[in-house]
Length: 136
Image 1 (cartoon, rainbow, N blue to C red):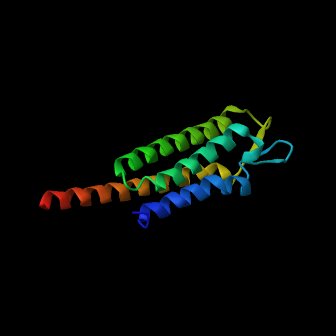
Image 2: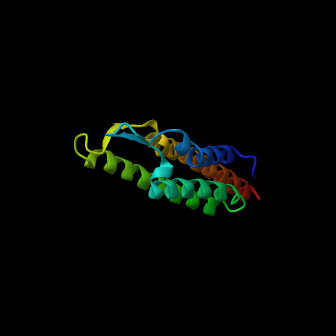
Image 3: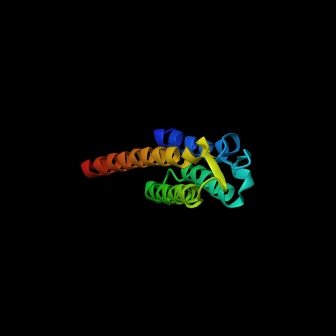
């Protein structure tokens, strides 16, 4: 059903992926210029893909197993994005390209937390349905 708690979690993930990368900077480079997601096409595509996947997962409520798998794919996508941020911030030496990290680098971590909460709620629903079927 669409009015379940996992829908709220997935909508939060969609909001995190679609809106916040444009509001919060990812990092500040050596020239004191803030870098946002729209300045990096790869990062922008990954954030938008995560948001679209979260929205499409909301409408898979009739098939909870597919919803669970789609959430796992979204978690992997966010881990990939987080790994890219870690690589980007640690690989560049000194003050050559990155001098300060922005709060936008934390968006994938928060998204992963909400996706895990959504998966727990989906699992709980699946267990409830299985227990009711067992009683019949």
